[in-house]
Length: 136
Image (cartoon, rainbow, N blue to C red):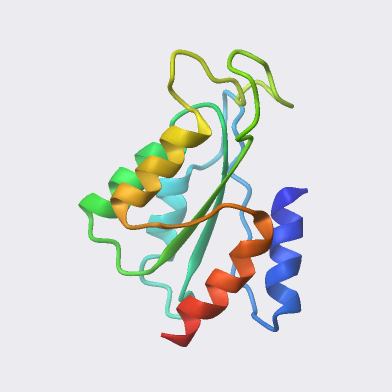
């Protein structure tokens, strides 16, 4: 849903997409953000990567550490959904719950910034940032 909207907004800018992958936040997932980045690392057709994260869990923070520690060669844009969700409230599925200060939108955004990942604060900003990064 949100991923579809962001994907569509990028497409409306005339920018193609190599891969749109939903990692999910359920207890058992098929892949994660680190696996996805590793898959795309040497892909010559991929120039910019967009990560649409959400509250709950720590996948985004782990991905940000990986990005920084491996000096990842491609720019990544991060957007985190759920900034206004109250702590402890389940949001949509089992993976989207925050507690004890971990998995918050703020902690994920902070991790992105510290890693050098460009942050979009609204879904509508993602396509603009993609376009700017492709012009570099």
